[in-house]
Length: 137
Image (cartoon, rainbow, N blue to C red; front, side):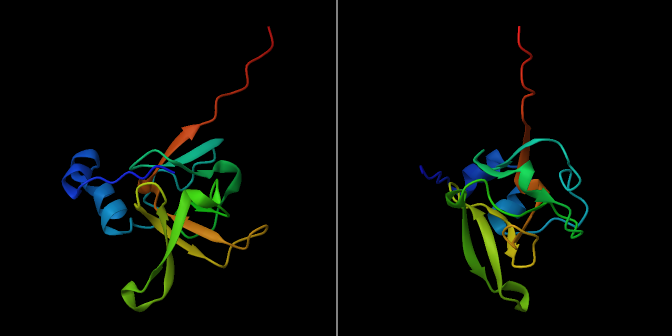
Protein backbone atom coordinates (compact mmCIF):
# COMPACT_ATOMS: atom_id res chain seq x y z
CA UNK A 1 0.00 0.00 0.00
CA UNK A 2 1.29 3.44 -0.89
CA UNK A 3 1.94 5.53 2.21
CA UNK A 4 0.76 9.13 2.51
CA UNK A 5 3.37 11.12 4.40
CA UNK A 6 2.59 14.81 4.79
CA UNK A 7 4.21 17.41 6.99
CA UNK A 8 2.25 18.60 10.01
CA UNK A 9 1.81 21.95 8.21
CA UNK A 10 0.22 20.12 5.26
CA UNK A 11 -2.05 18.11 7.60
CA UNK A 12 -3.18 21.35 9.29
CA UNK A 13 -4.15 22.77 5.88
CA UNK A 14 -6.02 19.60 4.88
CA UNK A 15 -7.95 18.95 8.12
CA UNK A 16 -10.23 21.01 10.33
CA UNK A 17 -8.79 21.82 13.79
CA UNK A 18 -11.08 19.17 15.37
CA UNK A 19 -10.05 16.54 12.81
CA UNK A 20 -6.39 17.43 13.28
CA UNK A 21 -6.69 16.99 17.04
CA UNK A 22 -8.17 13.49 16.71
CA UNK A 23 -6.38 12.20 13.62
CA UNK A 24 -2.89 13.64 14.16
CA UNK A 25 -2.74 14.19 17.94
CA UNK A 26 -4.65 11.02 18.96
CA UNK A 27 -7.43 13.01 20.57
CA UNK A 28 -10.92 11.70 21.30
CA UNK A 29 -14.23 13.30 20.49
CA UNK A 30 -16.95 13.36 23.16
CA UNK A 31 -19.13 10.26 23.38
CA UNK A 32 -22.41 10.53 21.44
CA UNK A 33 -21.21 13.76 19.78
CA UNK A 34 -20.20 12.28 16.42
CA UNK A 35 -22.37 12.49 13.32
CA UNK A 36 -21.77 8.83 12.38
CA UNK A 37 -22.47 7.18 15.74
CA UNK A 38 -26.10 6.37 14.90
CA UNK A 39 -25.66 6.07 11.12
CA UNK A 40 -27.38 2.92 9.86
CA UNK A 41 -27.03 3.51 6.11
CA UNK A 42 -25.39 0.94 3.84
CA UNK A 43 -21.89 1.87 2.73
CA UNK A 44 -18.25 2.22 3.67
CA UNK A 45 -16.41 4.30 6.24
CA UNK A 46 -13.23 5.93 4.98
CA UNK A 47 -10.31 7.61 6.72
CA UNK A 48 -11.15 11.32 6.90
CA UNK A 49 -7.48 12.17 6.38
CA UNK A 50 -6.63 10.14 3.27
CA UNK A 51 -9.82 8.47 1.99
CA UNK A 52 -8.76 4.83 2.49
CA UNK A 53 -11.73 2.48 2.99
CA UNK A 54 -11.46 1.25 6.60
CA UNK A 55 -14.79 -0.23 7.71
CA UNK A 56 -18.00 -1.57 6.13
CA UNK A 57 -21.49 -0.84 7.43
CA UNK A 58 -22.17 -4.61 7.51
CA UNK A 59 -19.67 -4.83 10.38
CA UNK A 60 -21.03 -1.83 12.35
CA UNK A 61 -22.96 -2.43 15.56
CA UNK A 62 -24.38 -0.42 18.44
CA UNK A 63 -21.96 -0.97 21.30
CA UNK A 64 -23.61 1.61 23.54
CA UNK A 65 -20.21 3.29 23.91
CA UNK A 66 -21.12 6.53 22.13
CA UNK A 67 -18.73 6.01 19.22
CA UNK A 68 -19.15 4.12 15.94
CA UNK A 69 -18.17 0.50 16.59
CA UNK A 70 -17.19 -2.23 14.15
CA UNK A 71 -16.34 -5.92 14.51
CA UNK A 72 -13.50 -5.76 11.96
CA UNK A 73 -11.80 -3.54 9.41
CA UNK A 74 -12.70 -3.85 5.74
CA UNK A 75 -9.29 -5.53 5.22
CA UNK A 76 -6.67 -6.50 7.79
CA UNK A 77 -4.06 -4.38 6.01
CA UNK A 78 -6.27 -1.24 6.13
CA UNK A 79 -5.47 -0.56 9.79
CA UNK A 80 -2.44 -0.89 12.02
CA UNK A 81 -2.54 -1.49 15.75
CA UNK A 82 -0.22 0.10 18.30
CA UNK A 83 0.19 -0.14 22.06
CA UNK A 84 -1.21 2.97 23.77
CA UNK A 85 -0.11 3.55 27.37
CA UNK A 86 -1.59 7.04 27.74
CA UNK A 87 -3.98 7.96 30.55
CA UNK A 88 -2.58 5.25 32.86
CA UNK A 89 -4.06 2.42 30.77
CA UNK A 90 -2.77 -0.13 28.32
CA UNK A 91 -4.94 -0.15 25.21
CA UNK A 92 -4.59 -1.01 21.54
CA UNK A 93 -4.74 2.07 19.34
CA UNK A 94 -5.99 1.69 15.76
CA UNK A 95 -4.53 3.86 12.99
CA UNK A 96 -5.09 4.12 9.26
CA UNK A 97 -2.40 2.03 7.60
CA UNK A 98 -1.97 4.48 4.69
CA UNK A 99 -1.52 7.78 6.53
CA UNK A 100 -0.92 6.68 10.15
CA UNK A 101 -3.84 8.78 11.40
CA UNK A 102 -5.40 7.87 14.75
CA UNK A 103 -8.85 6.34 14.39
CA UNK A 104 -9.62 5.03 17.87
CA UNK A 105 -9.01 1.84 19.83
CA UNK A 106 -9.83 -1.85 19.53
CA UNK A 107 -11.08 -3.88 22.51
CA UNK A 108 -11.63 -7.64 22.97
CA UNK A 109 -15.28 -7.25 24.09
CA UNK A 110 -17.16 -7.18 20.80
CA UNK A 111 -19.78 -9.54 19.39
CA UNK A 112 -19.21 -12.54 17.15
CA UNK A 113 -17.79 -13.36 14.74
CA UNK A 114 -14.55 -11.64 15.83
CA UNK A 115 -15.15 -10.76 19.49
CA UNK A 116 -13.54 -7.38 18.74
CA UNK A 117 -14.90 -3.85 19.12
CA UNK A 118 -13.19 -1.25 16.96
CA UNK A 119 -14.29 1.91 18.78
CA UNK A 120 -13.67 4.68 16.25
CA UNK A 121 -13.97 8.45 16.44
CA UNK A 122 -16.75 9.62 14.14
CA UNK A 123 -14.74 12.69 13.13
CA UNK A 124 -11.93 10.41 11.92
CA UNK A 125 -14.26 8.86 9.34
CA UNK A 126 -16.13 9.86 6.21
CA UNK A 127 -19.16 7.81 5.18
CA UNK A 128 -19.74 6.87 1.56
CA UNK A 129 -23.17 5.38 0.85
CA UNK A 130 -23.26 2.36 -1.38
CA UNK A 131 -25.00 3.05 -4.67
CA UNK A 132 -28.36 1.34 -5.05
CA UNK A 133 -28.34 -1.43 -7.65
CA UNK A 134 -29.59 -0.33 -11.05
CA UNK A 135 -32.90 -1.69 -12.17
CA UNK A 136 -32.69 -3.82 -15.33
CA UNK A 137 -33.70 -2.05 -18.54
